[in-house]
Amino acid sequence: MLKSEVVDAVVKGKFNIFAIDDVEDGIKLLTGLAPGKLQRNGSYPKGTFNYLVDQRLRDLASVLKGEKEPENNNSSNNKKTAPANRKARK
Image (cartoon, rainbow, N blue to C red; front, side, top):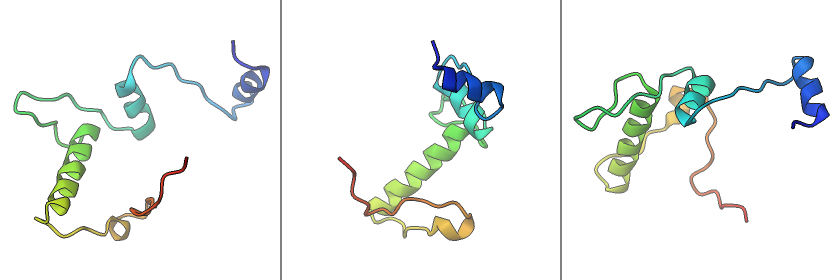
């Protein structure tokens, strides 16, 4: 059962709880994007979450292989990202 503090927060509209069946439901809920199903050719439909992730991973792989210069994504959108050299916490 949920703690009474959580139930009270939900009743007051300060907190929401959503039931999902799988991670794909969570992706849709949190991003507003359809996750996208893997197609026979190994790609995802354009405009889906998985398509964007796949494209970003391909870009990063190209940079690591020296095939491409890194892009400064912070200038194209105002989202903050963690520094690449940030040490993991233990």
